[in-house]
Amino acid sequence: MNARFHDFAHRLRANPGALFALAIIVALTALTVFGPRINPNGIETLDWLHMAAAPSLQSAHWFGTDRLGRDLYARTLEGARVSLSIGLVASAVSLLIGIGYGAVAGYVGGRTDHLMMRIIEILSGLPLIFFVIFLTVIFGRNESLLFFSIGAVGWLTMARIVRGQTLSIRRREFIEAAIASGAGTGRIIFKHVIPNVIGPVIVYATLTVPQIMMFESFLSFLGLGIQEPRASLGSLIADGAGEMEAAPWILLIPGGFLAALLLCLNIVGDGLRDALDAKES
Amino acid sequence: MGQTVSPTLSAPASPALSIRSLSVSFARREADIRAVQQVSLEVGPRECVGIVGESGSGKTQMFMAAMGLLPSNATPSGSVLFEGEELLAADARHLNRVRGSKLTMIFQDPMTSLTPHLQIGTQLAEVLVCHSHLSWSEARTAAHRMLDRVRVAEPARRLKQYPHELSGGLRQRVMIAMSLLCEPTLVIADEPTTALDVTIQAEILDLLRAMRDEAGMALVLISHDLAAVAGIADRIVVMYAGRIIESGATAELLRQPRHPYSAALINCIPTVSGPLLARLPTLPGQPPQPGDSIEGCAFAPRCPRAAERCRIERPPLQDVGSAAQVACHFPLST
Image (cartoon, rainbow over all chains, first blue to last red):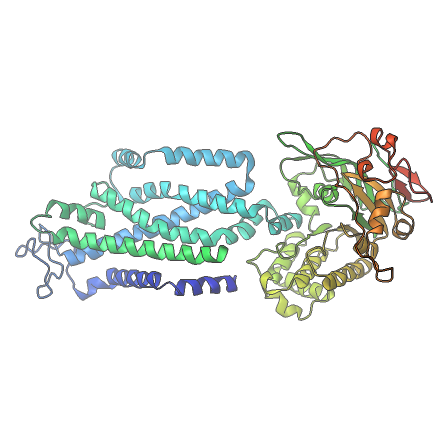
């Protein structure tokens, strides 16, 4: 494992694009956490004197203000923070459910596997957006519902991937040896199967973070996600889209943030996958 | 038509493993494959039995059935008694109590039989924690002692290493150590030396022999290499196309094989002292395809002594001499 990890790290280091993207992600994340301290404008404070002001480093509003005079710097950082944390939390949730579900289906196999995979197919057949709209109508708008509905669908692909990986190692000799030495099913799944499939799965998880962020932004853009006065990148973009002829920066700044984050996350995810694939092949 | 046989050696105590008319068939779309057909075999306590046969002769599947390791499309029938308890019908809970502690297995390829992401020490200790309910620290100490017993140098360092850091021979020693941890009654070694190079093979076989003498367990050695088995087995069982065709005490069988197939196998062992041959002797022909249904003797098409009768009527496994059996209409004369 150590040598494998070493190899993996080496290949990753040989990919300057991925390292650069990783550096940008770290920098942007740090900015969303520590940025508000540098320029202490509240996300809800209205500045009546500067409504829809253009970005300027001389004024108090570095990124300008929106239509209501709220500071865009503070709101963009808040939005990026919310988007990132939704991406991370929902990915982690989908990772946990997906690993458990996929490993059990793949390892136990037979009829159980069949049934579990059919359930996944039914769930992935549901149109997600209608699903979310229904939930919003029934339970009203709140953030935990958003996490739940994204997480509820996000784990499906993860479970499929884990199941595939599990199938590929299930017939390997060390699993057979573990059975032959009297280990129970649960022990085999948790001690011998999951740790061996976790590498490629984690890499896939890094690719689901941008997917989920994208989806959250989409929901927020439609007004189904994060609600005012809080912001996510998607709701900021929705606001900006209304003003894009008069005040394009209200759209471009959060849009640029989202694009940069998604691009970098995808590049890093691809880099991780390549680093892992190179070892496998 | 069954060839159920009484125990070959007069085992004094109850046998460690007793296989009775065991058949294993694999369901396939076209035709079922009958990998093992009506095989009966007893392994006495402390006895070392060598199972010899070509690939596909059913030698491994026979013991996979005993360990409950058959793939899901295989159905075993018959009976496998281990220390008097039926294994074929046993549920997983019962099987898990037996396998790994009293009935253990050493696999062919030590390179892939150890879980890659766990330290050797953890894997060894896990067996004891599972079966003997020792604490992890006690189990690690016991693992250390066991590595020492299977002559692994620097056991303390090895315990902290991962499988890929060890050579093939060392890994097989670790597998042997693992199989011996809970003082088993029977160890099944499935081609334990096939994946290793020749000098290491000899060491591993020596180790198995020594462990058998020290630990006093019964040992089943499955191999396609008659020469490898001959060195340690008390008794040799020759299998062909899913059936036992000859069994007998090692020395006797080697000196005086009765079945033409055994004779041909022995003939194929190259010797250092014999005349230099331009080509090593081989057996002409191919073993039957696993799906074929065979009326007579499965070996008849390749057999120099085959007569018309061999193609029509399958020879039953019959007692010959004191403790030997052969399934042949025209056994080589004694």
